[in-house]
Amino acid sequence: MSRFLFTTLPSNDFGLLARSLPIANELRQRGHQITFCHPARGPQILIREAGFQNLLPDDPVYCILHENFFRLLRKGKRLRTLKALAHMMIGSFRWRAAELWNVDDFNALFLNNTDVVRANIEALAQVMESTKADAVVDFWSPWSCIAARLLKKPLITVIQSHQHPQSPGFIYWKNPPPNLPTAVPMINKLLSDYGLPKIRTTCDLFMGDLTMVVGTPELDPIPGATNVAYIGAILWQNPGLRIPEWIAELKPDRPVVWIYPGALRYAGRNRQGEILLRASIQALTGEDVQAVISTGFHNLPSSLSPLPPNFRFEPFVPGLTMAKRADLMIHHGGHGSCQTGLYSGTPAVIIPTYSERESNARRVVEQGAGEMVLPTYEASGKKMKVDAAELAGKVRKVLSTSSYKENAMRISTKLKQYGGPPEAAQLIEEAVVLHTTARIE
Image (cartoon, rainbow, N blue to C red; front, side):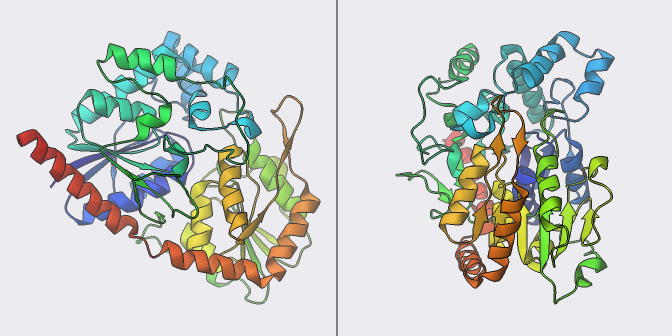
Protein backbone atom coordinates (compact mmCIF):
# COMPACT_ATOMS: atom_id res chain seq x y z
CA MET A 1 0.00 0.00 0.00
CA SER A 2 1.21 3.51 -0.82
CA ARG A 3 0.17 6.85 0.67
CA PHE A 4 -0.77 9.52 -1.89
CA LEU A 5 -1.40 13.22 -1.33
CA PHE A 6 -3.69 14.76 -3.96
CA THR A 7 -3.31 18.50 -4.59
CA THR A 8 -4.92 20.95 -7.02
CA LEU A 9 -5.01 24.63 -7.78
CA PRO A 10 -7.22 25.61 -4.82
CA SER A 11 -10.05 27.39 -6.62
CA ASN A 12 -13.66 27.14 -5.46
CA ASP A 13 -14.96 25.23 -8.47
CA PHE A 14 -15.12 21.60 -9.54
CA GLY A 15 -13.08 21.24 -12.73
CA LEU A 16 -9.80 20.04 -11.24
CA LEU A 17 -11.38 18.20 -8.33
CA ALA A 18 -13.69 16.26 -10.65
CA ARG A 19 -10.53 15.23 -12.49
CA SER A 20 -8.72 14.08 -9.35
CA LEU A 21 -11.50 12.20 -7.51
CA PRO A 22 -11.92 9.36 -10.07
CA ILE A 23 -8.19 8.58 -9.97
CA ALA A 24 -8.15 8.81 -6.17
CA ASN A 25 -11.13 6.45 -5.99
CA GLU A 26 -9.45 3.93 -8.31
CA LEU A 27 -6.28 3.97 -6.20
CA ARG A 28 -8.34 3.56 -3.02
CA GLN A 29 -10.05 0.51 -4.49
CA ARG A 30 -6.57 -0.92 -5.11
CA GLY A 31 -5.78 -0.60 -1.41
CA HIS A 32 -3.87 2.69 -1.29
CA GLN A 33 -4.35 5.51 1.22
CA ILE A 34 -5.46 8.85 -0.23
CA THR A 35 -5.43 12.29 1.38
CA PHE A 36 -6.53 15.55 -0.22
CA CYS A 37 -5.44 19.10 0.51
CA HIS A 38 -8.07 21.60 -0.66
CA PRO A 39 -9.21 24.75 1.19
CA ALA A 40 -12.32 25.79 -0.78
CA ARG A 41 -15.90 25.11 0.34
CA GLY A 42 -17.43 23.47 -2.73
CA PRO A 43 -14.57 21.03 -3.34
CA GLN A 44 -14.42 20.20 0.37
CA ILE A 45 -18.05 19.06 0.18
CA LEU A 46 -17.29 16.70 -2.71
CA ILE A 47 -14.16 15.36 -0.99
CA ARG A 48 -16.11 14.66 2.19
CA GLU A 49 -19.02 13.04 0.33
CA ALA A 50 -16.56 10.80 -1.51
CA GLY A 51 -15.21 9.60 1.84
CA PHE A 52 -11.70 11.04 1.59
CA GLN A 53 -9.70 12.83 4.27
CA ASN A 54 -8.90 16.48 3.56
CA LEU A 55 -6.03 18.09 5.49
CA LEU A 56 -5.04 21.75 5.47
CA PRO A 57 -1.73 23.26 6.57
CA ASP A 58 -1.50 25.32 9.74
CA ASP A 59 -0.44 28.40 7.78
CA PRO A 60 -3.56 30.45 6.89
CA VAL A 61 -1.84 31.96 3.88
CA TYR A 62 -2.86 28.77 2.10
CA CYS A 63 -6.32 30.14 1.45
CA ILE A 64 -5.60 31.59 -1.96
CA LEU A 65 -8.91 31.93 -3.83
CA HIS A 66 -10.60 30.44 -0.77
CA GLU A 67 -13.86 32.07 0.26
CA ASN A 68 -12.67 32.48 3.87
CA PHE A 69 -9.73 34.66 2.79
CA PHE A 70 -11.33 37.97 3.76
CA ARG A 71 -12.55 36.55 7.08
CA LEU A 72 -8.97 35.58 7.90
CA LEU A 73 -7.74 38.97 6.81
CA ARG A 74 -10.24 40.72 9.09
CA LYS A 75 -9.07 38.59 12.00
CA GLY A 76 -5.51 39.73 11.37
CA LYS A 77 -3.94 36.29 11.06
CA ARG A 78 -0.53 36.57 9.44
CA LEU A 79 -1.61 40.12 8.63
CA ARG A 80 1.44 41.26 6.70
CA THR A 81 1.55 38.23 4.44
CA LEU A 82 -2.19 38.19 3.97
CA LYS A 83 -2.18 41.87 3.01
CA ALA A 84 0.37 41.02 0.36
CA LEU A 85 -1.96 38.26 -0.81
CA ALA A 86 -4.89 40.69 -0.85
CA HIS A 87 -2.87 43.06 -3.00
CA MET A 88 -2.10 40.21 -5.35
CA MET A 89 -5.71 39.09 -5.56
CA ILE A 90 -7.34 42.50 -5.95
CA GLY A 91 -4.75 44.97 -7.13
CA SER A 92 -2.77 42.66 -9.39
CA PHE A 93 -5.42 40.09 -10.18
CA ARG A 94 -5.82 40.90 -13.85
CA TRP A 95 -8.11 38.46 -15.57
CA ARG A 96 -7.55 40.24 -18.90
CA ALA A 97 -10.01 37.66 -20.04
CA ALA A 98 -9.28 37.51 -23.76
CA GLU A 99 -5.55 38.07 -23.32
CA LEU A 100 -4.23 35.20 -21.21
CA TRP A 101 -1.95 33.71 -23.83
CA ASN A 102 -0.38 30.71 -22.14
CA VAL A 103 0.33 29.05 -18.80
CA ASP A 104 3.19 31.46 -18.05
CA ASP A 105 0.82 34.37 -18.51
CA PHE A 106 -1.82 32.64 -16.39
CA ASN A 107 0.58 31.75 -13.59
CA ALA A 108 1.79 35.35 -13.44
CA LEU A 109 -1.64 36.12 -11.91
CA PHE A 110 -0.85 33.97 -8.88
CA LEU A 111 2.91 33.77 -8.66
CA ASN A 112 3.77 37.44 -8.32
CA ASN A 113 4.69 37.79 -4.65
CA THR A 114 7.75 35.95 -3.35
CA ASP A 115 6.59 35.82 0.28
CA VAL A 116 3.19 34.40 -0.66
CA VAL A 117 4.64 31.80 -3.04
CA ARG A 118 7.23 30.71 -0.48
CA ALA A 119 4.57 30.48 2.24
CA ASN A 120 2.36 28.29 0.06
CA ILE A 121 5.25 25.99 -0.88
CA GLU A 122 6.26 25.53 2.73
CA ALA A 123 2.65 25.08 3.88
CA LEU A 124 2.13 22.29 1.37
CA ALA A 125 5.48 20.74 2.27
CA GLN A 126 4.21 20.60 5.86
CA VAL A 127 1.17 18.58 4.73
CA MET A 128 3.32 16.27 2.61
CA GLU A 129 5.49 15.52 5.60
CA SER A 130 2.64 15.16 8.12
CA THR A 131 0.79 12.69 5.87
CA LYS A 132 4.04 10.77 5.20
CA ALA A 133 3.06 10.81 1.53
CA ASP A 134 4.92 8.29 -0.62
CA ALA A 135 4.03 10.37 -3.68
CA VAL A 136 2.21 13.56 -4.64
CA VAL A 137 -0.44 13.50 -7.37
CA ASP A 138 -0.97 17.06 -8.57
CA PHE A 139 -3.51 18.86 -10.73
CA TRP A 140 -2.21 22.36 -11.63
CA SER A 141 -0.77 23.51 -8.29
CA PRO A 142 2.68 25.05 -8.92
CA TRP A 143 3.30 25.32 -5.18
CA SER A 144 2.72 21.58 -4.70
CA CYS A 145 5.00 20.69 -7.59
CA ILE A 146 7.83 22.71 -6.05
CA ALA A 147 7.17 21.36 -2.55
CA ALA A 148 7.28 17.76 -3.82
CA ARG A 149 10.62 18.38 -5.51
CA LEU A 150 11.93 20.10 -2.40
CA LEU A 151 11.10 17.00 -0.32
CA LYS A 152 12.27 14.62 -3.09
CA LYS A 153 8.82 13.05 -3.25
CA PRO A 154 7.78 11.27 -6.47
CA LEU A 155 5.64 13.76 -8.41
CA ILE A 156 2.83 12.56 -10.64
CA THR A 157 1.08 15.29 -12.60
CA VAL A 158 -2.22 15.18 -14.45
CA ILE A 159 -2.28 18.07 -16.90
CA GLN A 160 -4.18 19.60 -19.75
CA SER A 161 -2.28 19.88 -23.00
CA HIS A 162 -1.89 23.65 -22.41
CA GLN A 163 0.38 22.93 -19.44
CA HIS A 164 2.98 21.09 -21.47
CA PRO A 165 6.14 23.08 -22.36
CA GLN A 166 5.61 22.25 -26.06
CA SER A 167 2.04 23.56 -26.12
CA PRO A 168 1.32 26.49 -28.45
CA GLY A 169 -0.56 28.10 -25.55
CA PHE A 170 -4.17 29.04 -24.95
CA ILE A 171 -4.54 31.41 -27.92
CA TYR A 172 -3.09 28.96 -30.43
CA TRP A 173 -4.71 30.70 -33.42
CA LYS A 174 -2.60 33.87 -32.97
CA ASN A 175 1.04 34.76 -32.45
CA PRO A 176 1.64 36.03 -28.89
CA PRO A 177 2.88 39.58 -28.36
CA PRO A 178 6.34 40.19 -26.90
CA ASN A 179 7.08 40.72 -23.21
CA LEU A 180 4.16 38.84 -21.74
CA PRO A 181 4.02 38.70 -17.92
CA THR A 182 5.97 35.81 -16.46
CA ALA A 183 6.80 34.53 -13.02
CA VAL A 184 9.88 32.62 -14.22
CA PRO A 185 12.56 34.98 -12.79
CA MET A 186 10.92 35.03 -9.36
CA ILE A 187 10.35 31.26 -9.37
CA ASN A 188 13.93 30.62 -10.45
CA LYS A 189 15.19 32.72 -7.54
CA LEU A 190 13.12 30.59 -5.15
CA LEU A 191 14.24 27.35 -6.81
CA SER A 192 17.85 28.48 -6.46
CA ASP A 193 17.28 29.20 -2.78
CA TYR A 194 15.91 25.66 -2.40
CA GLY A 195 18.78 24.12 -4.37
CA LEU A 196 16.47 23.00 -7.19
CA PRO A 197 17.04 23.24 -10.96
CA LYS A 198 15.82 26.34 -12.75
CA ILE A 199 12.99 26.37 -15.28
CA ARG A 200 12.54 27.91 -18.73
CA THR A 201 8.79 28.25 -18.39
CA THR A 202 6.37 27.62 -15.54
CA CYS A 203 5.05 24.72 -17.64
CA ASP A 204 8.24 22.92 -16.60
CA LEU A 205 6.88 22.81 -13.05
CA PHE A 206 4.06 20.51 -14.19
CA MET A 207 6.31 17.89 -15.77
CA GLY A 208 6.52 15.17 -13.15
CA ASP A 209 8.22 11.83 -12.78
CA LEU A 210 5.07 10.72 -14.57
CA THR A 211 2.94 13.16 -16.56
CA MET A 212 -0.51 12.21 -17.85
CA VAL A 213 -2.69 14.30 -20.17
CA VAL A 214 -6.48 14.32 -19.96
CA GLY A 215 -8.38 14.12 -23.22
CA THR A 216 -7.18 12.87 -26.59
CA PRO A 217 -4.52 14.02 -29.07
CA GLU A 218 -7.30 15.29 -31.36
CA LEU A 219 -8.95 17.48 -28.73
CA ASP A 220 -5.82 18.26 -26.69
CA PRO A 221 -2.85 18.29 -29.07
CA ILE A 222 0.77 18.69 -27.96
CA PRO A 223 3.00 19.01 -31.03
CA GLY A 224 5.86 16.53 -30.89
CA ALA A 225 5.32 15.45 -27.27
CA THR A 226 6.57 11.94 -26.50
CA ASN A 227 7.00 12.10 -22.72
CA VAL A 228 3.32 12.00 -21.73
CA ALA A 229 0.51 9.45 -21.58
CA TYR A 230 -3.01 10.38 -22.76
CA ILE A 231 -5.66 8.93 -20.47
CA GLY A 232 -8.93 10.14 -22.02
CA ALA A 233 -11.78 11.68 -20.04
CA ILE A 234 -11.40 11.75 -16.26
CA LEU A 235 -14.78 12.66 -14.79
CA TRP A 236 -16.38 12.26 -11.38
CA GLN A 237 -19.77 11.31 -10.14
CA ASN A 238 -19.98 9.78 -6.68
CA PRO A 239 -21.12 6.18 -7.28
CA GLY A 240 -23.06 6.28 -4.02
CA LEU A 241 -24.93 9.46 -4.88
CA ARG A 242 -28.71 9.22 -5.00
CA ILE A 243 -29.96 10.54 -8.34
CA PRO A 244 -32.68 13.18 -7.78
CA GLU A 245 -36.10 11.98 -8.88
CA TRP A 246 -36.86 15.22 -10.70
CA ILE A 247 -34.26 14.41 -13.39
CA ALA A 248 -36.24 11.36 -14.50
CA GLU A 249 -39.43 13.43 -14.35
CA LEU A 250 -38.25 15.99 -16.94
CA LYS A 251 -40.63 15.90 -19.90
CA PRO A 252 -39.36 13.73 -22.77
CA ASP A 253 -41.03 15.83 -25.48
CA ARG A 254 -39.24 19.11 -24.64
CA PRO A 255 -35.47 19.64 -24.96
CA VAL A 256 -33.49 19.85 -21.73
CA VAL A 257 -30.79 22.52 -21.53
CA TRP A 258 -28.34 22.25 -18.65
CA ILE A 259 -26.64 25.54 -17.75
CA TYR A 260 -23.45 25.45 -15.70
CA PRO A 261 -21.51 28.74 -15.22
CA GLY A 262 -18.58 27.51 -13.11
CA ALA A 263 -17.73 29.66 -10.11
CA LEU A 264 -20.08 32.64 -10.06
CA ARG A 265 -17.32 34.98 -8.88
CA TYR A 266 -13.55 34.95 -8.73
CA ALA A 267 -11.61 36.98 -6.17
CA GLY A 268 -14.90 38.46 -4.97
CA ARG A 269 -15.24 40.86 -7.88
CA ASN A 270 -15.12 38.96 -11.15
CA ARG A 271 -18.74 38.05 -11.95
CA GLN A 272 -18.30 36.13 -15.20
CA GLY A 273 -20.42 33.18 -14.08
CA GLU A 274 -23.24 35.46 -12.98
CA ILE A 275 -23.15 37.26 -16.34
CA LEU A 276 -23.29 33.92 -18.17
CA LEU A 277 -26.39 32.97 -16.18
CA ARG A 278 -28.10 36.29 -16.84
CA ALA A 279 -27.53 35.95 -20.60
CA SER A 280 -28.81 32.35 -20.55
CA ILE A 281 -31.97 33.39 -18.73
CA GLN A 282 -32.56 36.21 -21.22
CA ALA A 283 -31.93 33.86 -24.14
CA LEU A 284 -34.15 30.97 -23.02
CA THR A 285 -37.06 32.75 -21.31
CA GLY A 286 -40.18 31.70 -23.19
CA GLU A 287 -38.32 29.16 -25.35
CA ASP A 288 -39.79 25.68 -25.63
CA VAL A 289 -37.06 24.12 -23.49
CA GLN A 290 -36.62 22.90 -19.92
CA ALA A 291 -33.67 24.85 -18.55
CA VAL A 292 -31.78 23.54 -15.51
CA ILE A 293 -29.25 25.80 -13.74
CA SER A 294 -26.67 24.38 -11.35
CA THR A 295 -23.90 26.36 -9.65
CA GLY A 296 -21.70 23.90 -7.78
CA PHE A 297 -23.09 24.74 -4.31
CA HIS A 298 -22.96 28.50 -4.94
CA ASN A 299 -26.10 30.47 -4.13
CA LEU A 300 -28.13 31.82 -7.01
CA PRO A 301 -27.67 35.62 -7.06
CA SER A 302 -30.79 37.37 -5.81
CA SER A 303 -30.74 39.62 -8.89
CA LEU A 304 -31.62 36.55 -11.01
CA SER A 305 -34.72 35.64 -9.00
CA PRO A 306 -37.45 34.82 -9.57
CA LEU A 307 -36.57 32.50 -12.44
CA PRO A 308 -38.91 32.16 -15.45
CA PRO A 309 -41.39 29.22 -15.38
CA ASN A 310 -39.30 27.07 -17.77
CA PHE A 311 -36.25 27.25 -15.48
CA ARG A 312 -35.21 25.14 -12.51
CA PHE A 313 -32.36 25.93 -10.09
CA GLU A 314 -30.41 23.26 -8.21
CA PRO A 315 -27.22 24.17 -6.29
CA PHE A 316 -25.67 20.85 -7.34
CA VAL A 317 -26.55 18.15 -9.86
CA PRO A 318 -24.75 14.87 -10.62
CA GLY A 319 -22.81 15.98 -13.69
CA LEU A 320 -22.61 12.82 -15.79
CA THR A 321 -26.26 11.97 -15.18
CA MET A 322 -27.37 15.51 -15.99
CA ALA A 323 -25.21 15.73 -19.10
CA LYS A 324 -26.57 12.42 -20.41
CA ARG A 325 -30.17 13.54 -19.82
CA ALA A 326 -29.61 16.97 -21.38
CA ASP A 327 -30.07 17.65 -25.07
CA LEU A 328 -27.69 20.61 -24.85
CA MET A 329 -25.25 22.11 -22.36
CA ILE A 330 -24.49 25.81 -21.94
CA HIS A 331 -21.28 26.29 -20.00
CA HIS A 332 -18.17 28.42 -19.50
CA GLY A 333 -15.73 26.31 -21.51
CA GLY A 334 -13.88 24.72 -18.61
CA HIS A 335 -12.03 21.60 -19.70
CA GLY A 336 -14.03 19.42 -17.30
CA SER A 337 -17.34 20.80 -18.57
CA CYS A 338 -16.28 20.21 -22.18
CA GLN A 339 -15.22 16.65 -21.35
CA THR A 340 -18.43 15.95 -19.40
CA GLY A 341 -20.57 16.91 -22.38
CA LEU A 342 -18.45 15.12 -24.97
CA TYR A 343 -18.11 11.94 -22.89
CA SER A 344 -21.92 11.90 -22.57
CA GLY A 345 -22.41 12.60 -26.28
CA THR A 346 -24.13 15.92 -25.56
CA PRO A 347 -23.45 18.98 -27.75
CA ALA A 348 -22.87 22.42 -26.26
CA VAL A 349 -23.10 26.13 -26.75
CA ILE A 350 -20.08 27.48 -24.95
CA ILE A 351 -19.57 30.98 -23.54
CA PRO A 352 -15.81 30.92 -22.83
CA THR A 353 -15.05 33.27 -19.97
CA TYR A 354 -11.32 33.54 -20.62
CA SER A 355 -8.85 32.38 -23.22
CA GLU A 356 -8.00 28.92 -21.86
CA ARG A 357 -11.70 28.21 -22.05
CA GLU A 358 -11.94 29.77 -25.50
CA SER A 359 -9.23 27.35 -26.59
CA ASN A 360 -11.29 24.43 -25.28
CA ALA A 361 -14.41 25.83 -26.95
CA ARG A 362 -12.68 26.22 -30.30
CA ARG A 363 -11.60 22.58 -30.21
CA VAL A 364 -15.22 21.51 -29.61
CA VAL A 365 -16.45 23.74 -32.45
CA GLU A 366 -13.71 22.43 -34.78
CA GLN A 367 -14.96 18.90 -34.09
CA GLY A 368 -18.52 19.92 -35.00
CA ALA A 369 -19.87 19.12 -31.53
CA GLY A 370 -21.05 22.59 -30.54
CA GLU A 371 -21.11 26.33 -31.07
CA MET A 372 -19.49 29.23 -29.25
CA VAL A 373 -20.68 32.68 -28.22
CA LEU A 374 -17.68 34.92 -27.59
CA PRO A 375 -18.19 37.50 -24.85
CA THR A 376 -17.21 41.10 -25.45
CA TYR A 377 -15.42 43.33 -22.95
CA GLU A 378 -15.36 47.01 -22.12
CA ALA A 379 -12.18 48.95 -22.89
CA SER A 380 -10.87 48.24 -19.39
CA GLY A 381 -11.13 44.50 -20.10
CA LYS A 382 -12.94 43.96 -16.81
CA LYS A 383 -16.67 43.96 -17.60
CA MET A 384 -17.92 41.08 -19.71
CA LYS A 385 -21.02 41.16 -21.90
CA VAL A 386 -22.80 38.28 -23.62
CA ASP A 387 -25.18 38.76 -26.57
CA ALA A 388 -28.34 36.97 -25.44
CA ALA A 389 -29.88 37.08 -28.93
CA GLU A 390 -26.81 35.37 -30.42
CA LEU A 391 -26.94 32.78 -27.65
CA ALA A 392 -30.62 32.05 -28.31
CA GLY A 393 -29.95 31.66 -32.04
CA LYS A 394 -27.10 29.20 -31.50
CA VAL A 395 -29.10 27.18 -29.00
CA ARG A 396 -31.87 26.80 -31.60
CA LYS A 397 -29.31 25.88 -34.28
CA VAL A 398 -27.65 23.14 -32.23
CA LEU A 399 -30.95 21.68 -31.04
CA SER A 400 -32.36 21.55 -34.58
CA THR A 401 -29.25 20.24 -36.42
CA SER A 402 -28.57 16.53 -35.95
CA SER A 403 -24.88 16.68 -36.89
CA TYR A 404 -23.96 18.31 -33.57
CA LYS A 405 -25.33 15.34 -31.62
CA GLU A 406 -23.77 12.88 -34.06
CA ASN A 407 -20.34 14.48 -33.71
CA ALA A 408 -20.61 14.58 -29.92
CA MET A 409 -21.40 10.86 -29.95
CA ARG A 410 -18.44 10.19 -32.25
CA ILE A 411 -16.09 11.97 -29.84
CA SER A 412 -17.67 10.12 -26.91
CA THR A 413 -16.72 6.81 -28.53
CA LYS A 414 -13.16 8.05 -29.07
CA LEU A 415 -12.76 9.27 -25.48
CA LYS A 416 -13.90 5.90 -24.14
CA GLN A 417 -11.15 4.12 -26.08
CA TYR A 418 -8.56 5.52 -23.67
CA GLY A 419 -7.87 3.97 -20.29
CA GLY A 420 -9.43 6.59 -18.02
CA PRO A 421 -9.02 6.26 -14.22
CA PRO A 422 -7.94 2.56 -14.25
CA GLU A 423 -5.14 3.33 -16.71
CA ALA A 424 -4.09 6.38 -14.68
CA ALA A 425 -3.98 4.35 -11.46
CA GLN A 426 -1.93 1.62 -13.11
CA LEU A 427 0.60 4.14 -14.43
CA ILE A 428 0.82 5.79 -10.99
CA GLU A 429 1.49 2.47 -9.28
CA GLU A 430 4.21 1.66 -11.80
CA ALA A 431 5.81 5.09 -11.36
CA VAL A 432 6.00 4.70 -7.57
CA VAL A 433 7.52 1.21 -7.88
CA LEU A 434 10.06 2.53 -10.39
CA HIS A 435 11.01 5.42 -8.10
CA THR A 436 11.33 3.11 -5.08
CA THR A 437 13.49 0.64 -7.04
CA ALA A 438 15.76 3.43 -8.28
CA ARG A 439 16.28 4.69 -4.71
CA ILE A 440 17.18 1.19 -3.46
CA GLU A 441 19.67 0.67 -6.27
